[in-house]
Length: 218
Image (cartoon, rainbow, N blue to C red; front, side):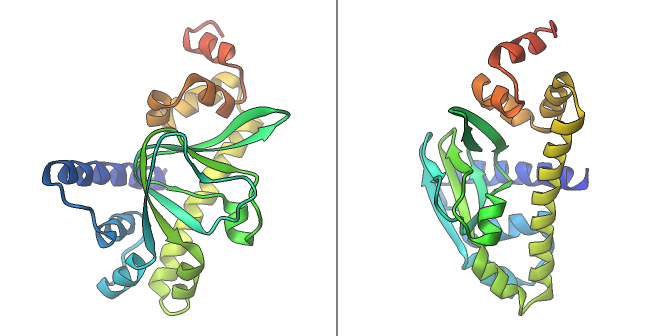
């Protein structure tokens, strides 16, 4: 898929920025983050990039922190600069992972963000993370003044919705083994870095079933 290839390219660029930061000890600017995001969602004029950079808020979080708690209203689309997060919810007392997000991708709870209602989905860091929170309401206001920013926003939403649809179709139409193979193919970083319990709940199976599939017994 085109958006997956673009996201992979974005992730490579993020890694270069991280290396530059680690060895140069220079804080990555909001404008550099906007330029990075534009590689994925559409070109903007320099002045438009500057306006978008003003909407970003850098957040540093430790492993296990909640970026969005149950009952809160989501205001931000969160671009992941480093680390990994997961969206999850509770059902019948079980912790179920809805999605994983790592470097070079956005993370948000769509229903809460679009309708400004309290969320049931939560966002938790599963590693130490640096995220850049993009104020969605202010982004929407900029769209009235710039067709390019409006197209940029549409590209973001398109990716969110495609990923959500692909996940739903996987649940509906694929076997347990096919879901696992898709996960390994499309989310290799999550496969390496997330816990067995989180991966199993994402795939709607028990950890024991996941172990059997991994060992070729399923």
